[in-house]
Length: 259
Ligand SMILES: NC(=O)c1ccc[n+]([C@@H]2O[C@H](COP(=O)([O-])OP(=O)(O)OC[C@H]3O[C@@H](n4cnc5c(N)ncnc54)[C@H](OP(=O)(O)O)[C@@H]3O)[C@@H](O)[C@H]2O)c1
Image (cartoon, rainbow, N blue to C red; front, side, top):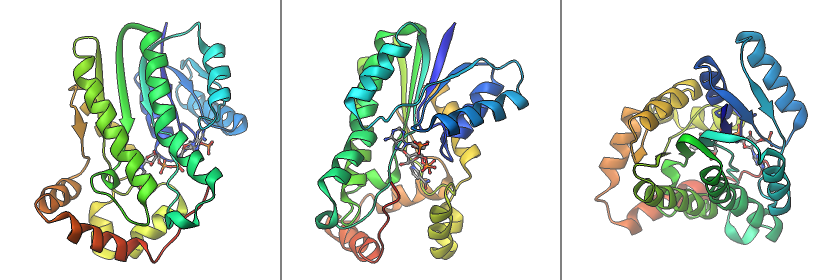
């Protein structure tokens, strides 16, 4: 039996991937930091899809030692799919970060995804798909959201390269969503953006469904939603300093540090 490994499964977007994959009859290995949250997610999914084969194993993906323990524990399994969802959207001026926070965010957002890609590639079954959740926030450097933006840019770059390196061996798709109303603070942020927020936001179940379709078509990158695609096309030719001034004005007024 080959497993679909979903990281960030306990979050707003990750749980939608888990539900959709269970509905498709995939055997699942779910991970997040909390064993309690993972157990209750497993119960929810099994109550809806009683034939589901679901394993779970907690792991703090920002911690290389815990990842090594996790890999040793699941090393006997074979994988058909990796869905890289786990991420931390800490947002603040770089000068205000503690060293602990910046390493945490860099490691969970980028280092862990790279490590997981290597692991599943070496433990793949007959076929392999790798789907990674990046963000439109990685399209341009974002003052006051600099580390998040840089990790998402790095994810898009790295997995786009793997899309070519692994041609014929594995499908590799990177998804760049705009806003997704998952946590309460994200919903409040979307509401505060008015009409644009409303237009550009996409429900997590739809983002997950469209992302899996993009992986099936082996798209290199995929931006869910008409308005997000339009934003990307409409801003592509604007000079970068203008874009960064606009971005700085917007993000310098807020701060988010939920992790
Ligand atoms: N929501 C949006 O507007 C939006 C837009 C674009 C891209 N994204 C990206 O989509 C992904 C999911 O976002 P979301 O809105 O669903 O966020 P969320 O609800 O906050 O979920 C984040 C997930 O990541 C897991 N996680 C965080 N730190 C971890 C760590 N150190 N080790 C292991 N797991 C960890 C969390 O698990 P536990 O807390 O249970 O450990 C949780 O399952 C993220 O990568 C985010 O950057 C989101």
